[in-house]
Length: 192
Image 1: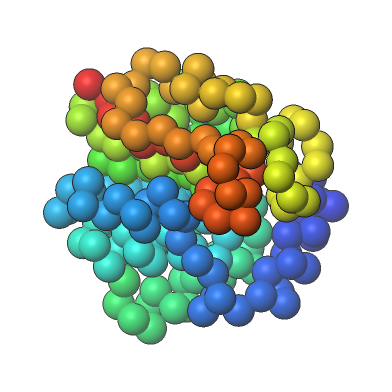
Image 2: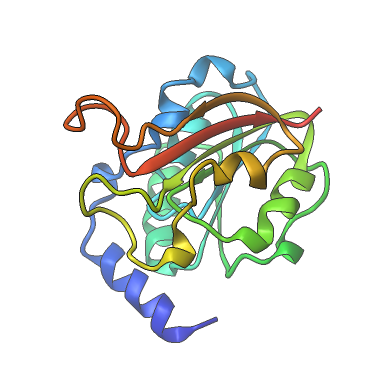
């Protein structure tokens, strides 16, 4: 693992409160689509707001992140509140995933194009992917500046074209730019 990268995120999470972490809107707004039980992954979980929400919905959750500081905070909370969350500190590669393992995968504000196929393969048949991350089209400064971590227009649809697309949203600069989803794209896809 890149020590400088891990240190960067450890420093960010050391000063962050777990209670301030918020789940991705794509997940929060679509809870009705979740199965009542099963295995879920919160990928690049940070302080684990998505993991907490998934566990509260009855799923058994794995939370993967590069920051041991963030995952320690999450695991302590999960243990204290008896939430079915298990944390894993790791740098995620395509080899990190097992085929047909998860019923739900959530990815929030993280982009590594090299693992997209592995994410899809890790879903069980009928499994759901909830994905939300930053786009190149910016209405205001938010998120990363490096284009490597920014989606091109409609890129999520291309990256996950093998899935049955249930929901997609990318508002860009349309309408009242002071309202609604900006700077991000959202996708929900189902493996058939």
